[in-house]
Image 1: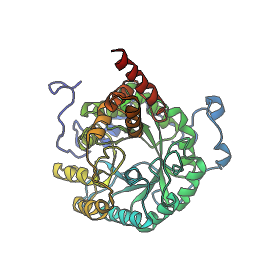
Image 2 (image 1 turned 60 degrees about the vertical axis):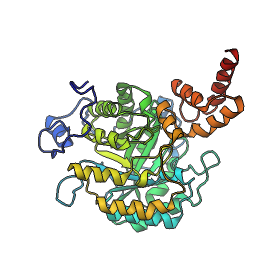
Image 3 (image 1 turned 90 degrees about the horizontal axis):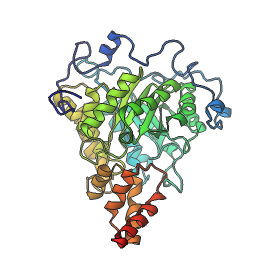
Image 4 (image 1 turned 135 degrees about the horizontal axis):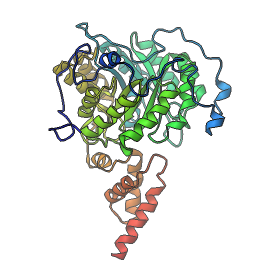
Length: 427
């Protein structure tokens, strides 16, 4: 805990360049100090450093037949971690921005992005200097389905369209094991994607090594995503992150899927991963508590070098960290991003806002999800169960948060509603 400031630290500290000693534990300072705990030597990440084979780890081996000898990708920027971007003044960027408007934003438009919309957004982001643009179904590769919602346009067509519009940015995709498969990665790599982001629940990193390994074999940058990261303590989260790093991840993200983290929560989790890992650490915020920008800045202060955002905050639930606001705030604070804040404002207002079905606001439902720490997929089902059993949806969501439910456990909603109804009747 930090002394004198309630454990949270000042919300914003002046930016100090990486080569100068500062409380901002920048990567250059870290490297000068030598390897952190958990740093390893030997075979490069992704080749020869895998964990035990899938059959010994009790994992399914259904992707093994798809894995060839690996090897490379001669496309520029297809491998390696975040690297250093340089802004217009020649200063290294404090972090690498990944804009997920065309992936997380897909939730907000019911996965109805058109090819023309994707081209316009990708072109605007690339011209603004955004280094990574994510394009996928909202639930990742293969997500277009009855369970998760059908896409209006095949995500492969959208990815190919985005690839034609960009000249400098990398293209990223999201993959959730169990929804997307290794063959999906091969297809999108050939379409131009060079960053694979593999997402699991924060306690289930052990289902990610095969997918991370496949990404590395394909010559892609591999990023691990620990979703609903507010649900476990920082040290436990760091243990899960090490599984992803050992599998070959170039970066592991603290992912606040429910928008439930306060600033101290974000600080503690990023700091724990920074202490435990030798790879990069990222942060993905949602805005249910109106803290997405503040939490992202706190993450940068604690050493995160990859940060996510969406134009206009367009995303699931109450939305994501608004990319244009994050870049503008960083510019005012003197934190270099390598991204043009005015071009981002134009992209948000002229390209994304006209295609939004409704303004991205924090209404009672969105706030409640962040307060309870429950993922947005539970909301509609909770409201229906509340009407059916004559109870308050707020009570259902708060109880679900207390029980620490995860995506896929929506069937528990009826059990909770029934329990609440019985208690009310007994009272």
